Length: 288
Image (cartoon, rainbow, N blue to C red; front, side, top):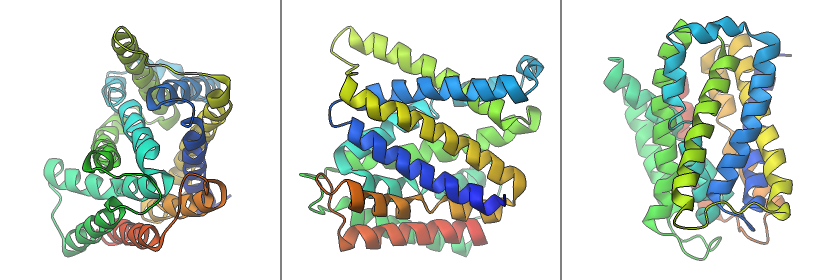
């Protein structure tokens, strides 16, 4: 199958994962969603790694980079994304999360010596306008506060920074499945420790049958999404794969309109804001 197919599959699977998570959050919370999805990720990714990856790569010093990445990605970024979904909805959170390539480019400028170009500047302008539109009360949630919008923005910032670290790590340990398994395990350990510490003061985990029926499939779906993007990058060029995989918000808008009509309302502002952000993402990935 071509790389474009796997890139498109990645976009759809992540959008579908967010839809399932939104449904699970109705009777649960973001911390529970993170721990559950990471547990599923660990099982799936290590299962693939044990079958297809030489595990002696674990002894290389470069593997520590992925342990470091796991301290905030995907655990913390996923928690921030889920908090955004919980308060803003999928149709607003996903387009903001799609701004990750912008932060990747900015960190590349700061840390790797790349230059600020006119397309990057214009893309930044488009994304800021799109986020501003999505930040305004759309009628799809009861109230939108600036703090709520910061959740997906911070998630995108951390995810963008992690791409720079992963680039260094993959140069030393060129096994994406193993790298993903290590980062998921590190994030899972940090998430459990955080839940244990916070749980002393308040109820943190709210796992029940109603939420579990959505969280487990969401974890499997996002694991498949991670695998699909690795296949896409292995088979095709980054300049082709990234723009296609960044179309997830369009799937989110469609899925939200079809299956979340009772809790979210997709408005013209949401569609326009999403289009502006995706236009910025496409610009920065195609012509940076």
